[in-house]
Length: 383
Image (tube, rainbow, N blue to C red; front, side, top):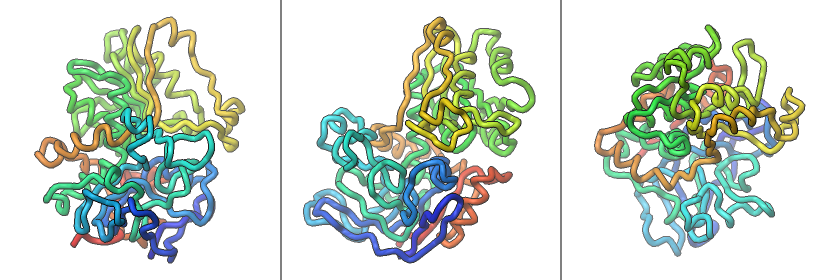
């Protein structure tokens, strides 16, 4: 099969690799028709993780079931499914609590919890930027889509990661109707967090970034664009909230946050959120942070540590929640919003590419080229 293969920093190619196949009775084999390039893929693409060469990328996947293992009861050949980026068993202590991002059985690395497709340190599983994908524990992990899947696949594929992750940011931040919300980052996840806050009837949604195309996307759903290259974002948030700060805050950037001059500061968005959010406010962090980052320009963060304004955080009585999204906690209800016409997350999509064009897509998306807000790849078509 053809697949997007990582060969080193900023070196990916579409290559022939052995076909994905059924390996265990509980597996499902999916022919991928829609898969996304995620901002998290860029950490690996840029060589900032220990992702092994020769592996297939891609953790936002949708396609048609072409084969099922002998122990699969629910999923059938011909079903169109969206697959959470979390690979989870469904029966461990964490999965039973709904903490599927922290499955205790699917990552073979001792002391690790959680697995994912084509992702550094998240198990040995290949990704779905390919013609075929093996889905372990298929009955548990495949979300079967309704009969409008073909015409809405660009919406439904967002259920694999970025929309549940954006929703998760607002859940961690405890967003409720009437709240004011500030979101740092207008990449795809930040835009999905803004969309989620809007769907939850937040009274004011502010999105901080400096890329005009991304800020324009935020404005399309009624969010207030805050350009941090014009003036300090904290000052702008305070002005918009009459000096009080936002009720809730979401961090959707992660450890490669840059200032407007292009210098990397892994603590920048977290500390800006402490300053931007009101006393007793809540913060949700879904931007990626990793235990060690030898390539960081920040000496502390080489060891996974940051200079966090804990004194101010404590003094303001704020609460913070963080971590990867447990996609299965949200994907069914969000699927229903799409099916019933209440939501259209594909509004973030800027480019649809064939599999052979994936290397160019990565290059444009990594450079944040104007207009490249979300890239969808189609290795095949639904029958």
